[in-house]
Image (cartoon, rainbow, N blue to C red; front, side):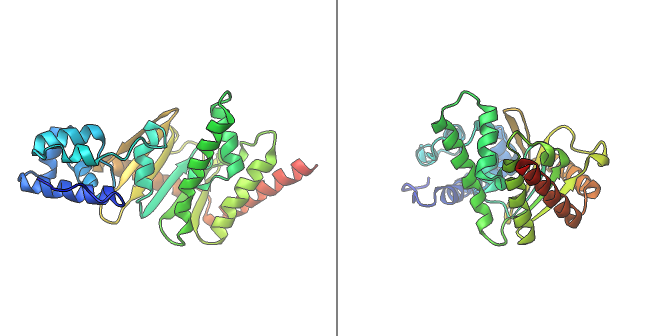
Length: 276
């Protein structure tokens, strides 16, 4: 059985390593442990490398199955995520990804939002929320964008539906500023972005948003999201299916050069309209 409690400065990596040791000591494969936990074998592998956290519920089951005397229950306490339940696992995986490919059908992706844009989005979601609640939501969203402070990792490739560029509120400067922010990230070679124009017609991801994440030492994941719902997939066939959908989107989207020109042109139009 694992011994002393873990170093709290790096709980997930250490806890995952201890899970691997305990599983191998019990002579169980990842698939066998996953079957008892009612998750896939790849899910177990992702917990072992830290891509997914070990939740309190899973920790309790792991202790019972592997006979680890409550070790994982004691050490899984990362607390409640600051993100909504349907997005928490995806946000945690996003922070560890080496590459992120995302299709945004309605809104600028969270990693690319400005403070003013995020505030308008959250206020639209929760029109009666207090300012303190909105402030907290905005702070958490902007904190995710710290991933882009690294000059190269993760690789971020976004396909923006033209709807994203056209959904301007009364204060068009907010969207203009957000589009200028995206353009600056493109021009600094930090991200790749393409626009899927209205003229592309029906496409492979009309049912909703899509995020694909790949990792250095773990299988890729796919995340799809709807209204207050989201699902993270690790099944290889499902991930491959979503990856094909993304490839089809990029094939039908404008080139990166033409996309940048359109983004900056729309931003300029909004700036002129607001000034007038």
